[in-house]
Image (cartoon, rainbow, N blue to C red; front, side):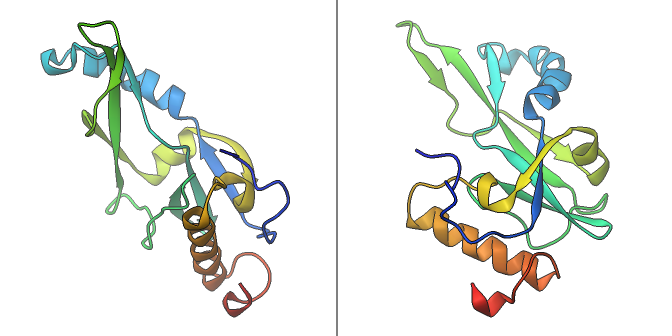
Length: 156
């Protein structure tokens, strides 16, 4: 699977700030190690890259699948992000949890604290199939309606 658009997508002129998930997980890992129900997991992860787009003073969550929220992330409307776990089963095979093992509450302050590099929207959302291309177009339209990027939503 390609992780960038190889210049094939329409430029968005919209910047996504990538969240340093590794550092976020490291800061919460000790809490999870204290839970006996999570003792079997030797690693915690998030299945997709996480990012946010700033629109004025508001921030909007988006992941590398092109999935995000239509409401701004605020202290009163934080993102509840699922954390998954990996473990080695009794046969020595690496496995992962099918459902989140815990949730982290992400406010604008936390998003900004764990901010890492910035990339164009068209490079942040993975490329692989028509579903991801459709997700990119939907995200592009959404942010253009918020006044970001160039062109009009109808031109996408």
